Length: 222
Image (cartoon, rainbow, N blue to C red; front, top):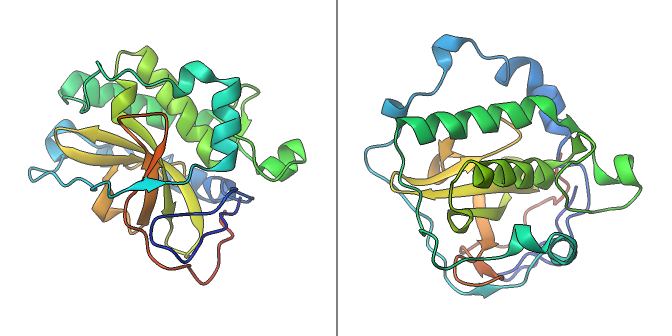
């Protein structure tokens, strides 16, 4: 999957193209099978929360617009919901469980390989998906478990290889935490090594800029 990323700080252009999820296959044997001694605990969460700051309006991803037309309930925003998730051990365990379960159960495949189209967002209904499908399914399941969807925002980043990638930001009272299909480790946003470009707004069915940077050397992601 590929993002065409503009040189302006507040935008990533139209489409996610390909190869976002292949990394999950390469990492599955190691990261997803980590021993119990490496399991994250509520006590391990940061004591000094850090949050990304939305700066201005940003252009939505084209495939997200199509997704919202077909899955209106998934994109609907209820401003009466909490803007942050209040974490406690039970909620944290639910987040960890859903994150690992989706990462293990969804078969990673690009949209081009799977559907013959460069980019499509869905809930991996057939058990196959790429990066945004993993995160959308996680949000769907976490919302069913009672977490506020308003505090779970789809997010576009540039990864460690300079390539476009989609993650899910959980906005919590312990800071912004990132769910990713490349790893089941849940990290504070500033410890991922990613450059944060934009995410869904908490105030409207729209996107906001997170600062971004100039175009990376490459935009193809896996």
